[in-house]
Image 1 (cartoon, rainbow, N blue to C red):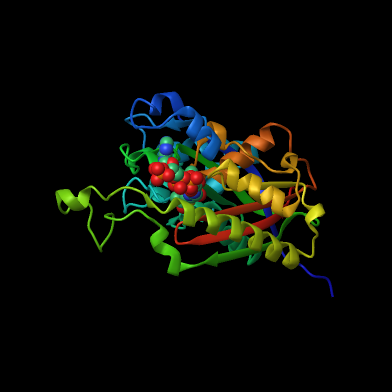
Image 2 (spheres, rainbow, N blue to C red):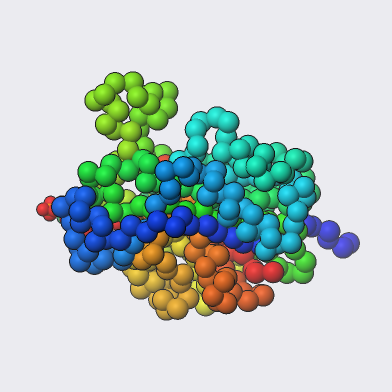
Amino acid sequence: MTSHAIQAGILGVGSYTPEKVLANKDIEKLVDTNDEWITTRTGIKERRIAGNDQVASDLGIEAGLAALKDAGINAMDVDLIIVATSTPDMHYPSTACIIQDKLGCKKAGAFDLAAACTGFVYAAVVAEQFIKAGTYKNVLVIGTEVYSRVVDWEDRSTCILFGDGAGAAVFGPVAGDKGFKATTLGSEGSGGDMLTLPCSGSRIPFGETESVNARAVVQMQGREVYKFAVRVMEEGTEEVLEKAGLAKDDIDLVVPHQANIRIIEHYAKKMKLPMEKIVANVDKYGNTSAASVPLALDEAYKQGRIKSGDNLLLLGFGAGLTWGAAVIKWA
Ligand code: ACO
């Protein structure tokens, strides 16, 4: 009997970063730090900062438009929009609905997805389910963040790390043996305290008191998050490769979450992968959370580093704690 399973894959990608560049030298004027410390500990040289009038939806719209254009899809052909973000414009309306309206995707459902820096990988896996079930054809997934609004610019241990940006991909049915080969999603809520953005929900409503308000910024136990990151990147890779029935050498390009070049280099060493097989642009953008994987993916694509038939490994990790991995054969 012939199988008529629908295979989901990537039809187009796009990204957007704000114009304003904040270099390490500029941060030296804000907190007691220096370019040398930031570069050696993180690999970050600069990051982008959204304009005063820009919010997450604005960045996401630009990335979404670019992805639709790359895919050759009209706004009216989008069936579903998933926006991965932990810095939404507001709790509701969702950033996805704001983007749906402004892009003119009149036939699309839309929702936000919260998995912090793993958000894009989580959203990509959700998109795959709708497509292979035959429910939807074209799913626009956007990762967009304005972390500059939720970091404490007086805390040198966190403010140096983050940046603003957006990346997007259109997922849809692909032919032949292309598309998703395997995925895995994980969570470790017991480690949630390692990385939090408190004072933004029902536990401590935003702006409740002045003292509480001071905590409406990213709080992180950097060392612990670092250990978590290197562990799950390795475990996630092994798990997803096994599910896909592939060997490490079958992977042509790894697109990991961009948090710290040391995490990426540690991963490369542990997995015995050459750095040429791993996308790293954390030097230019810092950690853009849910935007980082699609931003790196789009950059690699524009640089001609991805060709049809290549096996890509998308790898995310972040607050929750969460992680996720997906192997996708490029259409
Ligand atoms: N400039 C100068 N000195 C600094 C700075 C700074 N910007 N920040 C910290 N230091 C100091 C500390 O005070 C400390 O000084 P001490 O030894 O006198 O106490 C010293 O440098 C070492 O600090 P550590 O925090 O131990 O430095 P570490 O080598 O661990 O690097 C870092 C810190 C870069 C944050 C690292 O731990 C890291 O990258 N962790 C992972 C972060 C990450 O992946 N985050 C993901 C977020 S994902 C999401 O979902 C949002």
